Image 1 (tube, rainbow, N blue to C red):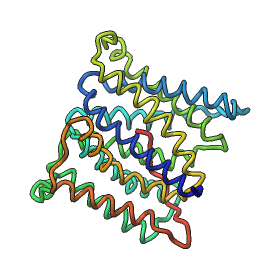
Image 2 (image 1 turned 90 degrees about the vertical axis):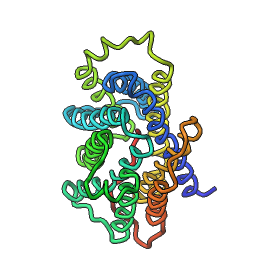
Image 3 (image 1 turned 180 degrees about the vertical axis):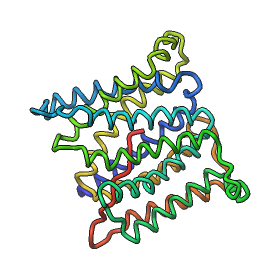
Image 4 (image 1 turned 45 degrees about the vertical axis):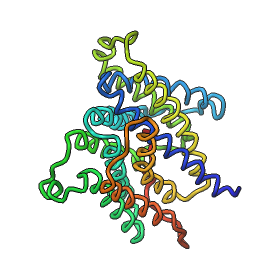
Length: 305
């Protein structure tokens, strides 16, 4: 298997693991405060990444200078994850996954504002098709609801979180001062854990940890070890073997994987009409994966969800 094929295989697994966060998160969202869940999740993920850092790069001299940078990035990611679980209290997992596919469009805008990154015409077409597919799913293929902009509260909440995630992408490049990826990620996770602990202290104290339903612990463990730590490794592996545009393309597989997760968990599948929007996101994926003579320069917009 060529390095490029191994990179694609890594991103297929990455997108499948990320999708699990939506299905499991929707089952646990109403059982625990989002800030409490994510504070524990950040602590566990930080421990895993910290161990990986010590086993590989160690702590380079000056790696944690200007700690405000980690606070900014940890704050943005904390906002994203808290609002994701808040949105999943009411938004169906497939709809939330469709909202997530809007992130590359917003990230492209932030990439131009902050880094002056240019989106190629083919990339712009793919982003528009993906956004159309996302809107199709979000509005349940209801043209009247689209015209009236009748969108669910959960989807709106999660979209605000996705804006924070989209801003995170170019901010990583802007704030990184040469630190290895594993070190930079560790700093972000520690900062996020501190911020979430301070913000959600009352929720952490009030949560009856010993009597929480099993699905909450499954979600915490899954999101910490599989949807955070494992996906970080897969993402780093793929980015060394694929152009950033191709890595970003796998964002559009998320709704399809979520449908698979929902069927596997016994929650059923969406209607055929809604599935049409998912097919548009797959078309966007195909456009983004198509080879060009010149590599695309768009910001990478996948995430560990």
